[in-house]
Image (cartoon, rainbow, N blue to C red; front, side):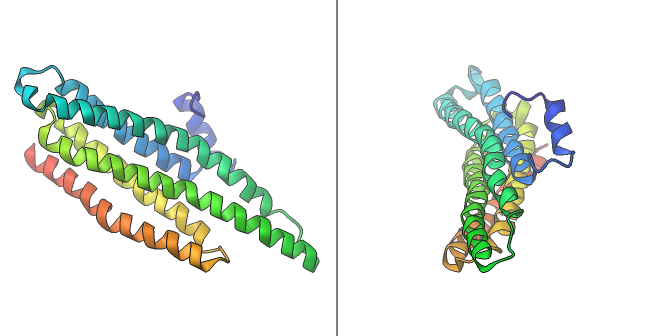
Length: 206
């Protein structure tokens, strides 16, 4: 999907096809946030006014580019992880043997399908940390884009969280499910408000 045009991605997203779905769209939103952050970095680098923070901005830019690429890859990974789950739902369950096999396949597929959006959430939180600093030291001429980036990342975090929960709620291994849910609650509790705070700081500076 990395080579899709925007139009093709949106066409498939709006169709009855199982993928791409909410997880992939969340990863894309996070990638957009990271890309916007990097744009601000490039508009800051080389300016005399920001010479004293240029080294730090360059570091943010490098990390941001790595995270953007990772989130772009996660768009594809989410689709790949969901395919076995969509097939598992169609497995027969007429006999005890069929039910046992279906449950085994479902459990593995649910774990894989939940792990990718959890990774999306973790990765987006790293972007939010970069944006938090960039809001202070980035070019004032492009500071609105830091606010936009924070909103994209908050949406990506919350969207990813929904895609974790829809899978963990069906997992039979409740220890694993609760471990994933606990991490998710922690990420949401810390980073959704952090992203909102970045947006409010930017809005207040305009």
